[in-house]
Every structure is written in structure tokens, then in C-alpha cells.
Length: 100
Image: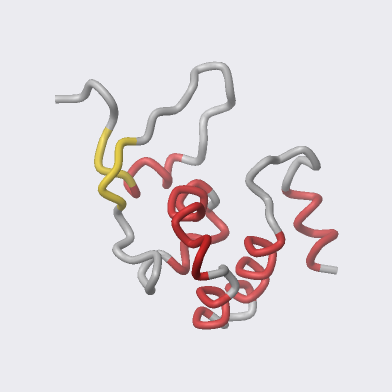
């Protein structure tokens, strides 16, 4: 049932959705934060450092290893051609490219 709910929120061609992200989101939804952080393959965690911050359903794991600290020391560059992400995402990154 959760996968059907996920598909209702996410477009089917969403490139960010992976099975690891689905498992983590499901674990967070039932309050299992530790299980959510373990859903990601440790060798691939670096690939999800940005994706976990772009997906608001995964923000619950950002205070826990290996995703902590919540605010990533990276600049978020977002293309103008795609829809803007949720405003809560902006504060999870250091700043904007070209910002002084």
C-alpha cells in the first residue's frame, strides 16, 4: 500500500526514487529512524547525500549518521528549466552559487 501512496505523490519518471529511498521513507513514516538510515547501502551513501536533502520525506534521517549534519556544506545549483523544489530544501545547503 505504501508504494501505491508513494506513486500517487511522485511522478513515475522521477529519477530520484530508488528502492533504498522507498524503504527509508517507509521506515520514517512508521517512526523507525534507525532502520531508515540502514536502508542505504553504506558503499553508496555518498550518492544519496544530496538526494536525501532534496526529498522532504527523507529529512528525518538528516540528523543521524551517515547523513548528519543536517546542513550540507555544499552549494545547491538548481536549473531554471525544472520546477522549483520545496522551500524547506534551501536551508539544508550552505548557500547559492554566486551568492556573496
